[in-house]
Amino acid sequence: MRYLPHTDEDIRTMFDTIGVSDFEGLFRTVPESCRYDKEMKLPPPKTEWDLNSYMAEIKSMMKITPEHAVLVGAGRYQHHIPSTIPAIMSRSELITAYTPYQPEMAQGTLQGLYEYQTLTARLLGVDVANASMYDGASALAEALLMGIRIGRKKKRVAVSKAIHPHYRAVVDTYFAPTEYEIVELAVAEDGRTDLSSLSAEDGFAAVALQSPNFFGVIEDMEKSAEAIHAADSLFIAAFSEPLAFGLVKSPGSCGADIVCGEGQSLGIPVSFGGPGLGMFGCRDKFVRNLPGRLVGETRDLEGKRGYVLTLSTREQHIRREKATSNICSNQGICTLTAAMYMASLGGTGIRKLAKLNFDKAEYLKAGLQQAGATLCHDAPTFNEFAVRFDSDFKPVQKSLMEQGIAAGLNLSGFYDDMDNCYLFCVTETASKDVLDTVIKEVKK
Image (cartoon, rainbow, N blue to C red; front, top):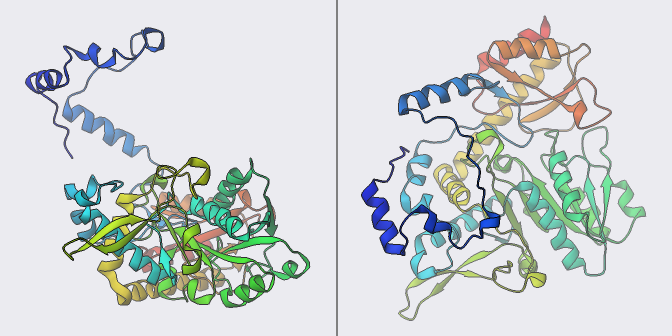
């Protein structure tokens, strides 16, 4: 979008309207002692073409450009975004929409959020979904706090080590100032969470797993639900790749009580790591403990269908100490984008896309094994997987980068016992030529 500066006449009209004579008048309520009175160290202004050249120069310094093929996932995924999505989202009534506190003025936004809730509930297999959270990591932390609210006197939660390390770090931050205890569950050799310790432990308000987990491994959700419920705990299912549910059973249908995760894959670009979309749903009986906000459908005095915020127990609505969530920001624009994406693909499209991701990842997995790599885990995976190399992979990684392919995430920085192990991710954006190039370089 081009920047169109205000004319002197525009500025004078605005000053006259608000009753000030100059820019200084805008800051008259700020005490002199609180103002910055030094010269701003800013570079001289640039012409529009000079600025474009400068930005192009900065772009050329990027390690990974839009022209690179990216075979790295770990919570952020490269997916094709239909051109209809940015075209519709660029409409002013959608791109500027935020929290619709005045329903009579925001029926379009509210209906869009209502449709998002419906589509999300179907995708995740839950009874009810909220109108989004900040991101997947904070959604998990909020889910665990929700579990503690439901568990009442229980002060402990269990979290799988196969959950994304960044998600676990956010959970640690949330829980650090509280009295609640976090217990980590080990990862078995097949890449799935080891739940054998649950029978010997008690007092867990909730147990959280991720599927597909950080290694791309699909957890046995139905058996996990049985074990967790047998321990008298709530089952929280997290995720970072929602497109997997086009191919594998949804967490809710497998027995999860609360489902939460990252929705970036649903039409939202990677954008240097943000923004994301926190998706969140649960069983109907837990709805009054749900964080965030809900959009409900109702009828007005004339019998016409309308949409309103309901059961929104954020700190703006009630006393701070009674709020179920103190996150002030929801991802309104990202939520509407995800709704458009899910509606555009439909159930059939999501299934086909998930199958394409799975098939391409399996092709690379088999090729790397034939080239000498060893799978770190033998459980089924979705569109990413971890392999171990006998020799140093870094020179190969550097060679691939020079060919425009960013491949593999070194896992040793996240897990001490995974030296020379790399996480690969394949989505529909990776061509067969790219995958064959990676396999060829590993064989050398």
